[in-house]
Image (cartoon, rainbow, N blue to C red; front, top):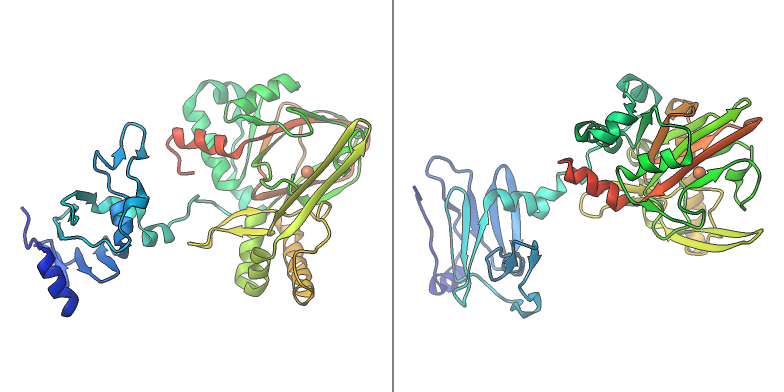
Length: 403
Ligand SMILES: [Fe+2]
């Protein structure tokens, strides 16, 4: 069963250190599983990937009973006790598993598929969250159905379909919801915890200028993300129009990642600057009994450093504070980059306009999809809330989705 096993003791290790390394292959039928011990890392060719593992990493991630508690999924090993110069004293591999013996005779086993999944090289080629980027045509053609409230509330499969579409597109609708704040809250709680803010738990919105924010007027609003002035902007936003007796007031939706990816392709220096320059956003309110001063700091575009995947856009020109986090020689470049992105976000072909109606609840990924609205007349009452992002993703993972 185990053909061409290669076993190495400390003496051989020293010998190999002095001589050139030889490639080892472990599968009799194929040359796919190649491995090599370098002085600084273990190199494995498997499943079309070339992976390199640091030896401390290999010791630290040991899943043996004494190093890892499978009941709690927590590490028991005290990582700080690992000798940073540790090297295997013996190593062998069969078609599925890597066996490492350490100098103290402790044995670590890794499934090769686990290594593929958890290696840097494996992570690098996979998106943390698969998405479908859209402009208005793509979104229209996708013909995403709204889920009915009853199905959404009672059937996990319907909830899963809803969340799958929400994760892919960054927006999703639930319909047949009674036009009340309570019913909206119940629907929101099906997927997450509600994130309370200074606007309260459920906010209820008219154009009465009761709060110190443009949103509480009848004016048009350019596309933006909300709560850019929080260190961690709210992850998901829920909107429900309870009534509107008047004209206008359509909601604007723009896929921020679609526009940002265009900038990455067509103007990489602008993209880079928007990823690197931290900008302050600020909310100062002194209206009635409300006194709030919030400050959030971070770049407009946020990417994971290991795969350059976008995970958050923080874009709100209304709430952007004084730029004092970057020296003057970058300021003009930053403004140019900001204008390039803004021009892309405002292209009509990237805009989706929807008229929110009583009964239809809209969920927006506030880390990705920007919203705005046209001006309106008459009484318009909107309610909604913010959701904690972690808990939405938690529900999605529980239902078996990649999130
Ligand atoms: Fe907003």
